[in-house]
Amino acid sequence: MNLTIIEKPKFKIAIVNSQEVLITDVQSALDLMATIWYEAGSYRIIINKSAIVEEFFDLKTRLAGEILQKFVNYNVKVAIVGDFTAYSSKSLRDFIYESNNGKHIFFVADENQGVEKLSID
Image (cartoon, rainbow, N blue to C red; front, side, top):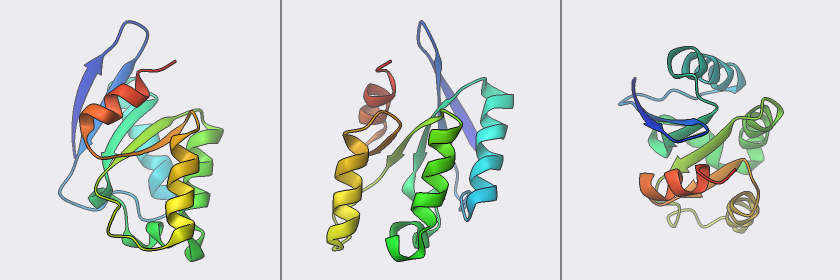
């Protein structure tokens, strides 16, 4: 895992680059949050969807809800970067829409959009 840090006046944004799946369950998500805080001092994370286990995007597993609730509970903002048009599930599309209208979790097409969303206080 490689981290790129973007310095903003009030905070840092950590961009996570990884060739492997980093988030497979709730504990791995908590571990990632702790690692990024320790290494980068950031509570704002941009991560590619390929670093998240595919079951996350099947809402029936409840994995997305459990993991994202931890991000909200610990006040960590996250932008997940990827192409989400391949998913045909209406419930997932609704979930992404609702998340993008919130303040903590964002599903974006590229890193620049992630930086933009995470730059809002």
